[in-house]
Image 1 (cartoon, rainbow, N blue to C red):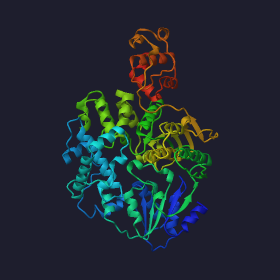
Image 2: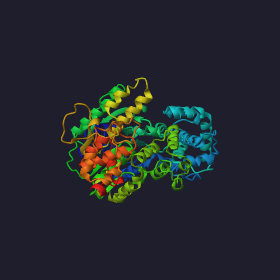
Image 3: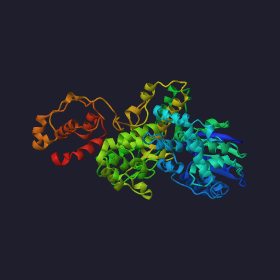
Image 4: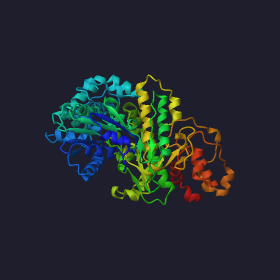
Length: 598
């Protein structure tokens, strides 16, 4: 590949620098060429974002004969300095709330599940500290990262207790009394003030660096290079910071993308312009020089697990001939929360089948309402999504997940998948020939409606990251993109590579006022007694149902049955009930309409 003038400038640079590289701009190639231009007897460290990137980068450096380059992740580097030299044992999956309660002997106040809610916040406080650059737990105000009013009130009430128990938890890990987490040994590495024996350190994906690792990096005497994309910061929920903004280094740019065309580049730039509603946004020039015309690798990308699962359910129920699909990061990771709660546990709780619940915490919940109260006080987004899926699909979930798993191919056969499904966080660094965007991202209209105060730095930062998520999703494509009309920038010109899709709802039910004006008198049993033709005369379907997202009622089932009997297509029914096509298919199967009237 012929290098650009921007790449040559970086390769020939001296001293500490930072490189702001747009998606698909050949940053790995640039870093390799930078390393080639350094003396062969110099020691170079390349810090990769995760294990998969590390393995890929190590191979590329090796193929170029750069034996003087050591490739590590922040955690692999910390592991060698802390774990390998000590007597620590690692707990790879971390600790669950119900495990922390007996471990610390946590006490509640007589109200239900208080000790488990405290354990949840202790876990988060420890994670917050381990990723920070602070020396002591008390140097951080945990309330700074609690946003929900109910959760904030709970934490305020128990703040001193939560803080003290967090310190006790860290102390137990430090003494080796209990297994340590990955976050813990990274923090211990930072606190040890390490001196790394390298002449050059190349820090990739700098926009999502943990403050702990950034602190280690900035204190080294080596020549330092940070590479990243300011607008691809999407891990602040893991307490990451944008090192490109924190480091006072000379700035270089990689503004030419070899992944996609100028049309896609223009779309990406227009989406980033939404940030002008939040702060003083400086336009980012992106030159698109991609020329890919193939359409083999197709992906559906969503912001959330919920949005992705709903889209996948719709896909497998509507396209029954599809034989092979693939989920980035393993399908099981989408049906389990971080703390190990499964979608099936939430379903069993909803159905009152406590004897089938495996999760210790959920087993103690009385019902779904109990769980939702816990979610509110802990801000557990993943559990919240599972509740929404259970409300949407209920007892159809096992059969639907089985269908998805039956069609799921292994990692080795990913290239055979007719569709790849992924959240944006799991597809970071990936690229596909064609991308379909799920309608669960933020839109410009939503940003304007929120009317965020310019002085609300936290709120603006969160919205900015929401825009970043859509930008990252859009820039995964090498050729075509299918995007909901509601997410398109206003007055964006027509492009043969950009296709608008119907802006369908993808989230679970919301509480809305039900419209009883339909007043349909008959029950579903009526349809078993009348032939299809007579059913059309006995009942009539009203206008668009304003009770969308309400739980399915007998009246709504009757409406659905009428429309099915009339021969309405799935799209029409989805629009009428304001639900996804997958939800309509699921309800048709549950009511056995295909058997009765097919």
